[in-house]
Image 1 (cartoon, helix red, strand yellow):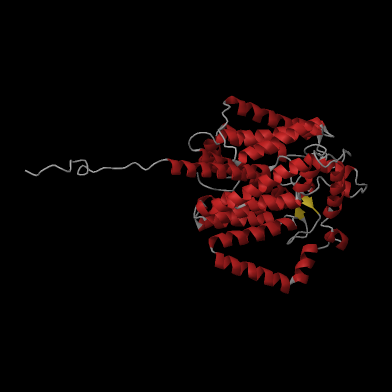
Image 2 (cartoon, rainbow, N blue to C red; image 1 turned 60 degrees about the vertical axis):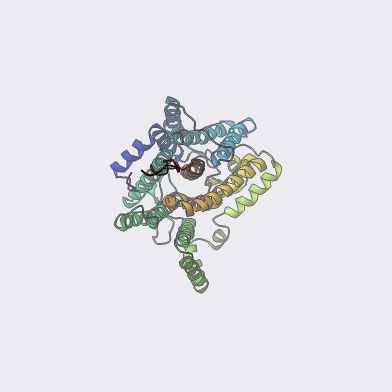
Length: 440
């Protein structure tokens, strides 16, 4: 399967669906249902999605995905130590939290999406060629991200009002957004695409002539985004890729970046701040304020939280600040899970992410051909710290994470089988002759 992030590459789409099968189609529908969210402008409250979008997009997509996964339900056998088991525990707790959720219908719907996404990978990791199917699922995720990011930039270039954000970026005076993708979200999407292309080229899976145009496409999306966080993701992840390629060059690169940051610290801060007010810049666009409020809410519901996927909504709706109440989330996945699922959910999800990171880092050394998958664990961490990431609700970050952990589980299982399988002994005809045979 030829790698490509171009959303107009129909051969790449066709190959990805051919390899991944019905689970690939189901994952595509789940991603569309989760990502094509339109903000409710009628005063529905903090982070409230349009009821029309839920009825016409999200619900049909999830129902169709459910029916596709029921066509041939075959769950792969898993070990108790597999990362997929930890994900199942996290999704299961999310679902059970419907019982005590402050907004049960939202928790139920979001938990269904997380469970269905897990089933996609549980089914795909069964039987032969499982690793190849997971690669096909990763391709579906990347192409879907690229498609939505590309549509946002096209709308921006056409200067459609809903696609233009009057907020300066790192390069442009205005930035791109879409009803279904924020300026920050576009930056996250673009940084993930750039990282995968870089890692695929570094692993030798694509030629430079193929990598460079795709790299430029990813940077073009990134150039009109409004996310400073995505710039940090991109910089940090590129340094990690360089370090994996050569520790000496990696150390030199990190040292050079740190030296440049010290020498030009004032210019960098001014550039990052742009026209933003100093108070807003210091509070990370209000993040630190809502984070403080989230900790206070956690103290009131410390063990089980207020329900999966609604912790941040409850915090923002009671924060008493009309400007911050327009935020769609806490912009921190760890606080989302802490307020939503309490200390129990936080421990499960944090352990899951730490173990996945450790195993992916080791697998990167032993199986460098999958560098384009493992490099995304850095992206998952950064988006979970500065956005909802993996730990909030279903989105492409969850799909990316499932690609990583399923690949790691399958690679570890393949290594165990190779150790268990004895190498057959080949005997020569001379060795089979009796030692006491006397020549005539």
